[in-house]
Image 1 (tube, rainbow, N blue to C red):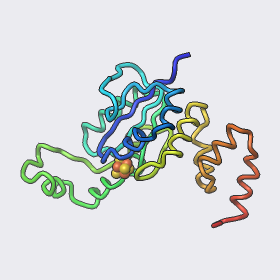
Image 2 (image 1 turned 30 degrees about the horizontal axis):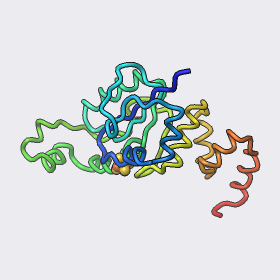
Image 3 (image 1 turned 90 degrees about the vertical axis):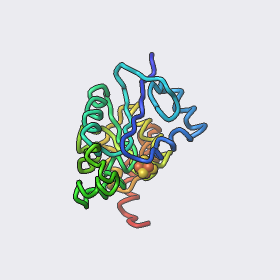
Length: 196
Ligand code: SF4
C-alpha cells in the first residue's frame, strides 16, 4: 500500500513551525516510516503536481495572491491542516488588522506600497475549510506528531476539540484512542480536578 502523500506550504510567517518539523530528528524518521513527504520547501526542492493526502499550511493569508494559492492547495488536498498560530489565528501578522491598510502598506514599502496590494490578515480557516489545527508559536512537536497519527488513523477533529475543551492533552487522548485506555476515567479526572 502506498504511503499517504504529505506536503508543507508556507504563507506569511517566519517559517519557524516548518523549521520545528524539519528539526524533529528521530521522531521525523518514525513519521517518515508511515508517510511520503512530496513537497516541503525547507528541506527539499522536488515539487508534486498530483493530489495531496495531507497538506500542512503554515502562515497567514495577507494578500489576494495568497487567497488564490491556498484555494488551489485546498482543491488538491484531501485533508488540510493549519500549522502554527499564524495559520490558526492569524498570529503576529494579525496586528496589521488594527491599522488602515494603506497606512500599513506605506509604513512597510514606502511610496512603492501600490505595487504590494494587501488585505486584512486572515487565518487559513477564514479562507478555506481546515480539517485539523496544530496551535502554538512555534508548534509543539509532540502535539504535531499526535495530530499526524490521528489524521492517519482517521480520528476526527471533533474528538480533539472536545478533549481540548476538557483540558485533556493530545498525547493522553492519542493513548486513549490507540491503546484502549479508559477515556471516561481520563475525562472524569479532568472534570473533578479542575486547575490541578
Ligand atoms: S506561528 Fe510563530 S513560529 Fe510558527 S510561523 Fe508563525 S510566527 Fe513563526
